[in-house]
Image (cartoon, rainbow, N blue to C red; front, side, top):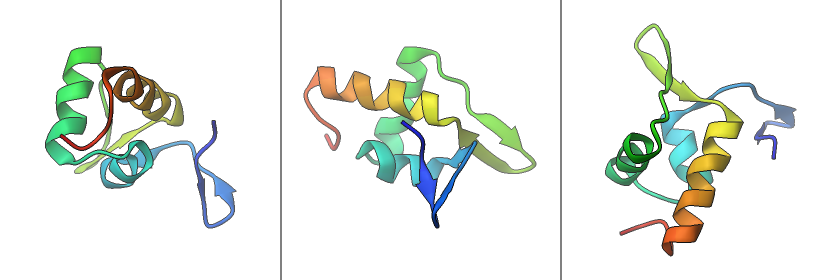
Length: 69
């Protein structure tokens, strides 16, 4: 599913926006990224995820029983 921000489909989602998108906090999203082997894209000092990576993380969390732990 594409991520829409200000009416535009985005290619990359910043980690903080990804947390909101998948419904979990900072530590949990990094834990799940480690489990799944998802590597964020680095753009300077900023890290971002593709919408496909966000969907992968959201599916994992849904199968595990939820976001916030």
